Length: 392
Image (cartoon, rainbow, N blue to C red; front, top):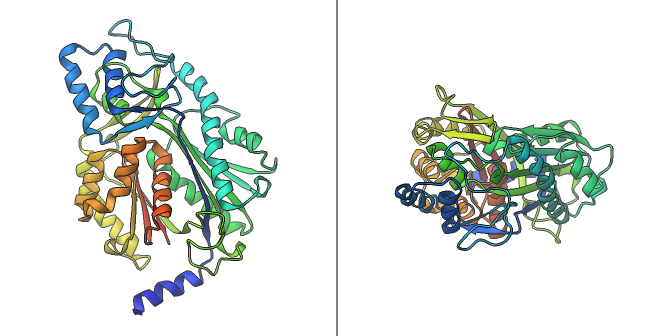
């Protein structure tokens, strides 16, 4: 038995901190495949016939086979049916107003979030009344009382549940939520934290032929994912390795050893997310993959070294699939094999980019496959910001 293995085992046996003890995910009832989505894109924005072929080629290149939307009236294998988006009446038509879209978010987001949260609670073995803290994460809608209050009511959480909302931080925001959960558990070791990400990205479909809008339309989808976090010492099985314990669940998933952040220099316009009159609008510069390749490795190698790890020792890469080019940039920057990002590509293919919920879907895949640890969650967002979380 190597000294390196003994060292890691010793660290884990004495670890006290944030332990993921429950995990749940939820997607909309109906899915649309990429052919139906491409056909919808050409029809809804009145794309000229000579541009339709380009749009359909873009959808083929996304690596997405299907994705869900709460707006779908039924499964879409060849054509999408919905009553929310109607074909553009003129070249200036930009679809529903932001208020109309946000009103629908107020209805749909709590329903999808509740499904994921209930699944996480069930897998943890905790009763709803055991939750002391609720962290909600979303960047696709705002209202007050919001999804946090809705979850307290729907799940019948204690009225004393303390709340934190992580808003408008984008695709890496699950990690920001984990950081808040670690802080809560460090201060209150008996706390039971429910973290729930929910994104209704399909509410922000953009009409017209702007390239940034076409790309965002082609990759984003709806989904929700939730985690239960406790202090490891609060579990009788805390001396067991992660992956053992409650025999009725897939969990514990693992320890959140630490999280990290790094702002990429000279990148403030590389990725943006703003509120327009007709939904939220995203821009994604073609420079993003190059920025990742230039800056990721130096930061990540330093972060891992602080925890006695290196790029080669990571057993599971939960890289947010912002798109196929983003995943290729991570592979190039870190000299990873294509197989090491199979989890990310699989979730992208099956569900699309569900913004903040997506990385938790990848963790769920790792649990089911018993993926060797440590795992690294890695995401990118407006800033350009790199966010990471090391899981043992």
